[in-house]
Length: 297
Ligand SMILES: C[S@@+](CC[C@H](N)C(=O)[O-])C[C@H]1O[C@@H](n2cnc3c(N)ncnc32)[C@H](O)[C@@H]1O
Image (cartoon, rainbow, N blue to C red; front, side, top):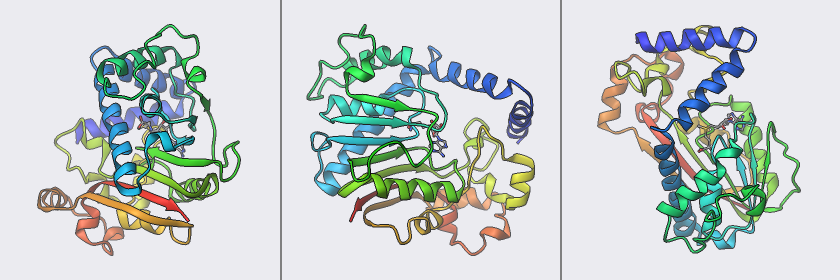
């Protein structure tokens, strides 16, 4: 609990002073690229990319090589997922983010690491020439950041839209706008794939916290004392995510909710969820991850 409170205090302080946001971003980038963490980060994102490809193939019969155009929402620091997709035959890719986090100078390192760990890819040559000046452009990728929906792309021009580990952050109206943008960008039959971690990110470095600690607080208290621009958790549960898709032209192929079982319910019981969540079933509150795959109708 102390670590959580200290981290929030530092974040709120840095959010309030000039140069604080730039300094925080530098710290975050340094941590992600640190020699002890960078390979772990690349390898885990590579595994996530392969899992996306498996899901698309198994649930929709769509292979990477069937995707002529992919839009990624919230690309982050390292383009591991798009480069993995490319190695597996994907065509043009448009990478977007609300903040320009992409570390272009690290792209050749990512590509070289993928050459080592992704030897079964059908296009294993990608990244071998690690000195390529702009590997992203060479591999038919463009990056737009800072960029908010609507993106500067034509309607119906994409076979795939992905949004990996982004939707834990934005408030509901922004998520709704992302869904509407996915619907606009996808061609009929195109796929919309998202993975969302749903438990409290502050509990990761602070084992004394329940992984559902953030559900203890009312919206007003969360906003007043904890919410901040660096970790703006929306605390949405799976049923609330489902409602944000209401009325949009998607057919649900996969809606996979992890957690919500006895172990997570025990973690939930370590806190008393605020009355604002009382209308939700405990298994919904105690969910830890959501993966959805939707088809544009
Ligand atoms: C945890 S990182 C995930 C990055 C990348 N998708 C991955 O899986 O490696 C979260 C990303 O979400 C982005 N993000 C946060 N709010 C967003 C929004 N409203 N629209 C688009 N991206 C957003 C952040 O800028 C950051 O790049």
